[in-house]
Length: 106
Image 1 (cartoon, rainbow, N blue to C red):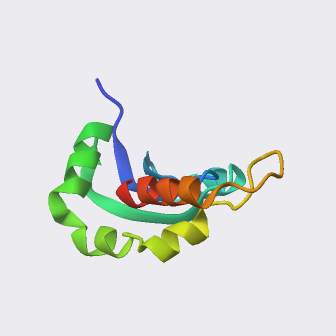
Image 2 (cartoon, rainbow, N blue to C red; image 1 turned 30 degrees about the vertical axis):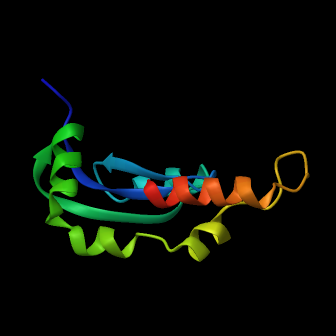
């Protein structure tokens, strides 16, 4: 028997990438926040679902209005991309723009 979940949603991890998440209740937000996640958005699932079912439900447009609002413009994506790497060196503009495009596609 597969594990089922009651909520599904998206978060932005510490690297700025948007990730699909599932859980039993919104208390999962506390752990994700401690791990550096931001922009945590949860949606109640109509019935308990497995992770693949929840992903399909979310992508099928059941919450299309909300996920469309999560789509970033280039300026918003660039603001989420760090200007310096972990060593403190500046990241080239071209590299930051590529990272922003990847963030927009996620």
